[in-house]
Length: 216
Image 1 (tube, helix red, strand yellow):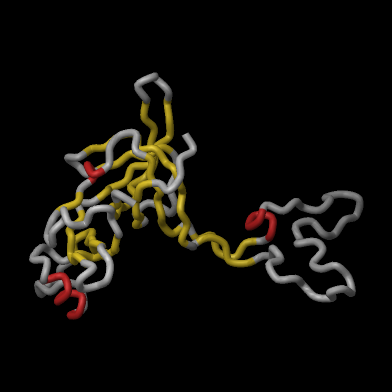
Image 2 (tube, rainbow, N blue to C red):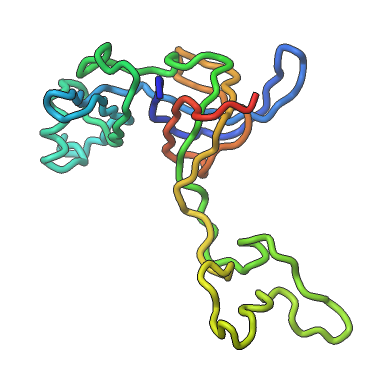
């Protein structure tokens, strides 16, 4: 992994390409992220940087909404306190020092990235919506329409096998969409426009990394 940043989903819109094609894109607020901690092989056994994203809110008394251990940890960086902290193993961490800024321009148009986040929660759902199973017949006296269907294979093994697709909680899980193309980068506002959809609703926190695959 060469490049990475923390982002926040703004929403979806449409843009025209240079060829005049209209495509759907997701607008992401990527950074600015502050290097809060730098890990080295001498002290920690590996090389990595810890990035902070989104300033911590301040209450009416002037105190930040953050606990003392997290506050003391971030004060070493010398910058404003951050709400979200994530660690990344970059290819060359030596170029980044504590307090440095990582912005959206770390990525360029045409880059392929993997975006990770928590998907939308859909609550308790049946097997048709959750797993895409087919419904039963709707006519001729059928009284079983949207049920699961056969659960097992008779007397042997005589039980429901592990992994059977059944109704249950759907969504609200960590998921990654791979090999998305960056269409535009607005360095001034730290906006990155990615072709297609990404996990989560508007406001969801995401991580953007170089893709681990290439399907071009």
